[in-house]
Length: 292
Ligand SMILES: *[C@@H]1O[C@H](CO)[C@@H](O)[C@H](O)[C@H]1NC(C)=O
Image (cartoon, rainbow, N blue to C red):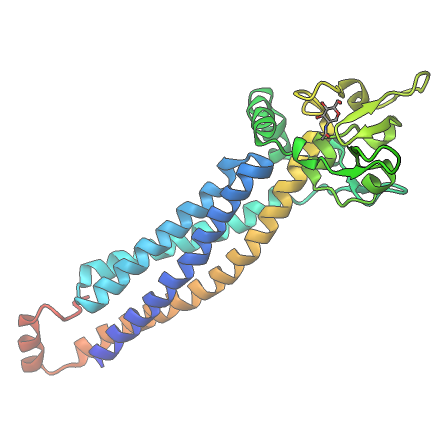
């Protein structure tokens, strides 16, 4: 029976070890994506930390069960409890800070438009903070998201490479960052030249402050626009929601594992107490016993 409990805890920890791999993977995936698109390296840290924590804890439980180290198993159950709480907090937090805001559909455009006024709360304040935004926008520039949007076609008369025509550009499904940061908002009514070069129509009344923030200077574009911040927020929301799905699945499995772990311990303890005196003393000589 004792051996059975240990085998169970060992097996269960092997499973949690396997679970920690996709969590860590999710964090690393986010960081890889962050490098190329949304420059939000700080966001995947909770995931990487939780992934590493589960990995270490399951190795602890596995080693504790294999080498029958009671103290290690006790620490294991204690720490595991906090990981479940941390994971639950992360899921709740991710949903709470990203509950509002989404792109808006515009006539004759396949892509969505983003407005900062659609967003609110802690994450918006964090992203909009001037010091923080300076870092994010510098990172967006360095990631070259906008220049990478360039697509060319051949001019039918001259045979030269020219930017893709406006009609085709309007049918593209742009990412929130591309839509918010690389082009002026559609409401400005600017004329398309290429993806990141737009000319203002003389005499048009502009009522969106983002239209005045737009610059054809290829290092500026709409990086200071509210639409860019909104695009970044939309991107965070999208990525966090995806990662949260993984987290919820992991959370459910961890809770089951935790309950099994606790039950196995209680079982082991009960069997220990029920054993006849003589056998119990003999068993104390072996370090393999659980003593609770
Ligand atoms: C758009 O045109 C500008 C000015 O000619 C050029 O500097 C820029 O590289 C072009 N951008 C893209 C994405 O093609």
